[in-house]
Structures are given as structure tokens and as C-alpha cells.
Length: 223
Image (cartoon, rainbow, N blue to C red; front, side, top):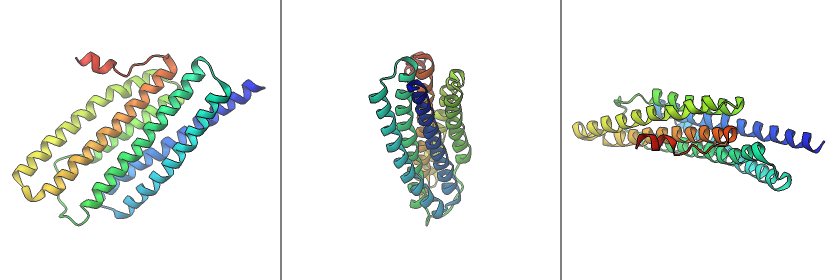
């Protein structure tokens, strides 16, 4: 019976993490929509969502640490709880980065609306797909899917570099649009950081399943 109770607690922990992931995904989508539409109401929603994410993070951490203290799990169960704690932190930071996009949006609400030479919708969709895939890898216990998420990180890094270069060029050619372009640079960086956190989640899924720390493998391969 104690073992069955423990497995039920692990299942509840996983459910809470998935709920947290849903909040983080909503934050990203709403923040990108707020920026693209210059929607003050959506900015307010992102802020409310961040508050919910912070509350969920605290509750999930408390449950995870309580399981570690009371159950003293071994092997794969221990790795799962440790991975949950780290993933929880990354999901909270995704909420923070989304809030950063909302702040950038509020700064330009009264500025002239212009078409920036960056496909922010595509960047947001790509980052969102990385989050969804990382969470799906957790749900299915799929290390190969987690591997693919880590590989996707290079593409959004490329998109961010291109956005940075194109927006700096815009500033040089049309200085009057400096505020909008600088905000765009920061939004692109927020999305790149969101993708980094999705990659971190995938890394923690691999740690849970394989018991392997692969955090530095991609960077080592590039050296």
C-alpha cells in the first residue's frame, strides 16, 4: 500500500507540472499576441497569468520537496522528482520572459505603429512548439523527442541573430524608429530565452529517463 500511495503522489506531481506548463504556454502565446496587436488588455492578462504561475511554482516545489523528505525515493523516481523541480523553475522563467514581452509592448503603445523586418509570429510559434514538444516528451517519457527539442534551439538562435542585425540596420537607416526597433530587439531576445528554457526542460527529461547529464554536449560538439 505505501508504494501505491507513493506512485499516486508522483502522478499528482506530474499532473501539477503539466498544469503549470499549460499556464506557461498561455503566457507565451498571449504575450506574443499582445505585442503583435498592441493589446493593453492582453498585457494585463499576461501579468495575471504570471501571478498564477508563481503561485503554482511554490505549491509544486513544496510538494516535490516533501516527497523527497518523506519518501526518500531511489533511482528513476528520485531523478523524476529532481527533474520536476528543475523543470518547474524553467516554466516559471518562461512566465517571466513572457512578462518581459508584455512590458515591451506597453512601452510602445503610444508610439507610431510600423512594420518591423522581423517575423515575431514565427519566432513565437517556434518557441511555443519547443515548449509543447518538451512537455510532450515529459508526458510520454520520450527521450528522443526531448533530443529533437534541444536540436531546435539552434534555429531560434539563428532567428534571433537575424532579427538583431535587421533591427540595428533599421535604426541606422531610420533613426526615428529607434524606440520600436529596440523594443523589437528585446522581444526577440525574450523569445530566444523562452526557447532556451524549453531546451532546458528537454534536458531534464533526458536526465530523468536516461540518468544522463547532457547539458553541455551540444556546446562541446560545436567547439
